[in-house]
Amino acid sequence: MSRPSETSAMPAQRMPVHDAEDLCVTNGANLGDALSFADELVPDDIYELTPGAPVRSLSFVVTDDNSFQIASESNCGAPGATLHADCVLTVMPPTGATIEIIVMVEVDEDGNVAQIHAAPLAPLSPKTPYSLVGIDRTGARQRMAQMACVSFTRGTRITMATGEQKPIEDIRPGDKVLTRDDGPQEVRWVGTHTMRAHGEFAPILISAGTLNNAGDLMVSPDHRLFIYQRHDHIGAGRPELLVRARHLVNGETVRVHEGGFVDYFQLLFDRHQIIFAEGISAETMQADKRTQPVLPQDLGQMHLPRGDNRPAVLQQEFEVNENLLDRPDAVDLLRRASTK
Image 1 (cartoon, one colour):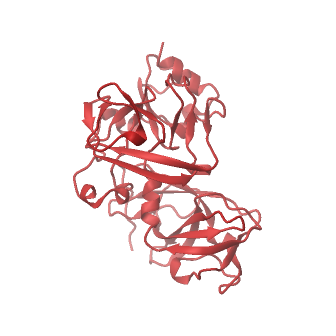
Image 2 (cartoon, one colour):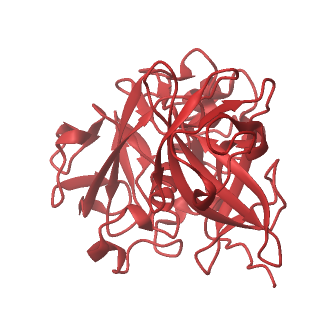
């Protein structure tokens, strides 16, 4: 069986995972067995995480044939191997708060199971009993699509075509938003979902003024901000930059906002756009193979934004390499570069 080739139009997505062998049944029908795919699981089994079990980073892409493939930069799994989004499990610790786990099945070239990856959407603790209370066999792909969506958080003020600053939760399809490249544009769809604000899924808080933003801006970790440099202080070799929020974290003016739950909102236009949030430029949701499962069926069947139908500055070559931002003064350099 030949492996599908990675698509070059979309960046890799990543999520923290445990090896399934590190989550074993300590009480129940499958006593002693490791976590597996849905067909082998039994509700009410009690799982515990092995002490010292590492959290790995699983990176993957969506291929041209709409399957998942482990990316070359992944630090677990076999690069190029096919992944199947098997199910979403709901487990409950003694506290009563539930945690979701996405089960990803890696297969070899012959289609046999090579490894199972467990991606918890909130941290798991060793020596804690987790009761399996739910098995969703159909929702894994949609949950992964939600995580791939670039999102603003509740309360973010978006610049409308009239100049009004409207909280994103008050925007409706048909409203006109000011875009950087195409002027006033109608919103086609507004999406929302709620997640635990932990680890890879916690939003990034950019304090007011940090990048000349009028107010605090809180976005999903992989949300890209657009910065125009009057002087290339960062050494990117070009004035127009796209910077992922997660790469700006310095623990002070830009930090991970962990704890509780976060309401994420997505704005979709006929074209992938740059809009103004809290007064600075940020990208909108892009409809592609990663995010299509969250869209209503009537939108999913239409010709929505693709990699070749967006402003030039939203192409991947404008994204700043993470290595250029791995310095304590990176945020300050970007702020000064855009104003002086």
